[in-house]
Length: 186
Length: 186
Image 1 (tube, rainbow over the protein chains, first blue to last red):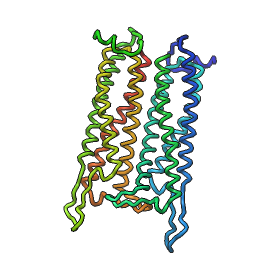
Image 2 (image 1 turned 30 degrees about the vertical axis):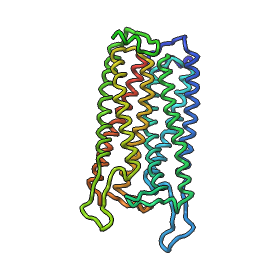
Image 3 (image 1 turned 180 degrees about the vertical axis):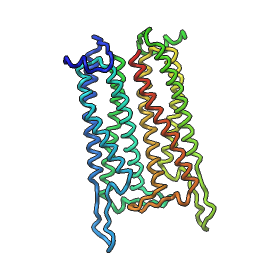
Image 4 (image 1 turned 90 degrees about the vertical axis):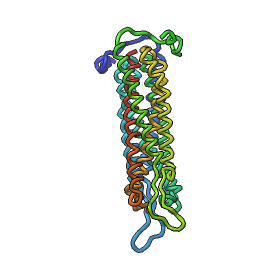
């Protein structure tokens, strides 16, 4: 804990009051980061390993659906992986906040990165959701057919893999809220 | 300004130092809100008024493309309108922050709402972007054809209307950053 005084890039005040609440907030922050990390990892893996080969084929084509047939799903996997990696990398800083309750500079740094990660994750999840909706329902005006009638298990898998991402989004909103409260108290 | 002491729901400290910077931050917050409000309003109007009727028709169908043929675009218009309305409603609170620089409770309240609005706006914009991409490029694996070959001006309009939303997203990230800095300083 001696090193703690060297690490903060900002002069921070050490307020004795409300330290216990801030420690509780920091511990919740740490747990939420692990939850969001696991959720986004699960989403990325579930989507990334999706493929289905239909049992019938013509002479030239074998019918096969993979996640990277649709660029949006590739973006979904990339966005979830990036956010998951960011969450793992932010864990040391989260532990540092449990030890040093008064650190403000690093908390603001994390709020900015959290906001960017939230935006990235939301973009990936909702773009994928738009395509999943199209795969289920199709669109008669644009003459896009519902591919879920053929690729059943593919569709179930891509729908399910959205869940982890949306859990991650909710957790990120809570993380930003917790950080704002912690900053106001320190 | 006498009413100011009655309005804050939270006991707030009045720190004489760094008040000037906080006032500057509050004024920038106000300007950013107007910019984001105009950007999302422009997006909603540009998308909401889009329709194109092709000059040829068969006996039974007239070829016509409207934004509400695709449910994702309806969501885009709704999301942009909601965020625009929220931004207008948040302006009085933003003015209150210019007057009362020490208010922490209302700033945290705004950070939470800003985060939710950011998530909503990102969801709408990226879902619409996924469909616009599909309209331009189509997808051969799923047998979805690029409708932009027929509906040229429709496609230009829906592509252009995304710009306002993405400007709004960037401004929201800046707004949350500014609020975090302002909270840490007060």
